[in-house]
Every structure is written in C-alpha cells, then in structure tokens.
Amino acid sequence: MFAHVEMTDTFGGEANYCWVKRANFPCDGLTDRQIVMRAKKAMDYSGYRTVTKNYGDGFRLDFAGMNIVLFISFSEDESDA
Image 1 (tube, rainbow, N blue to C red):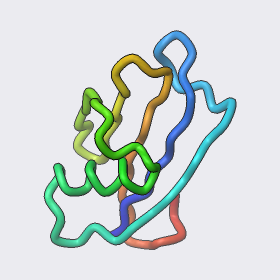
Image 2: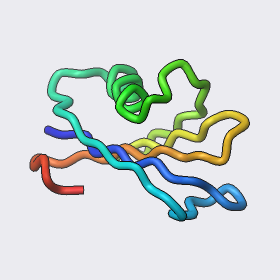
Image 3: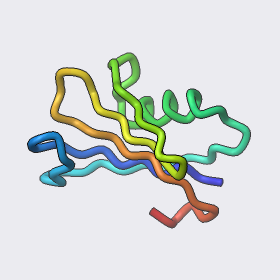
C-alpha cells in the first residue's frame, strides 16, 4: 500500500492548484498518525500545526494560519495518484 501526498495553495478555503507539490511513500503497517507525520515530513512541513480530517479513504490537512492544504490518498500501486 502506498500513500500519495499532494500539497497545494487554497483560495477561500478550497484547493486552488496554482502550484502543487507531490510525493508518495509505502505505508504498510503505519498508523494514521504516522502516515500524517510522514506526509508532512515529505513536504518539509514537519512541526506545523494542522487540522486533520479523515474521510475514510484519505485525509485532508489544513495548516493553521496558512493558505495551504495537504491531501493524502492511498493505492496499491506506487505510480497511481
């Protein structure tokens, strides 16, 4: 299982996609918290406070005081985004 991470800017609280940064990593055996921490580290935003929403099939992280959102989705294939 692979986690696919996508970070972009927001406008009016919604994803804007003026710019986007992507990464992926294997996540077998990791807890939800570990996946979120690893995703933030992959985007070089470790230590920043977020509000995390779990949608069952992925996560949305809104960064406190910043116009940035991070999405985490999952797939069996490393190349699927």
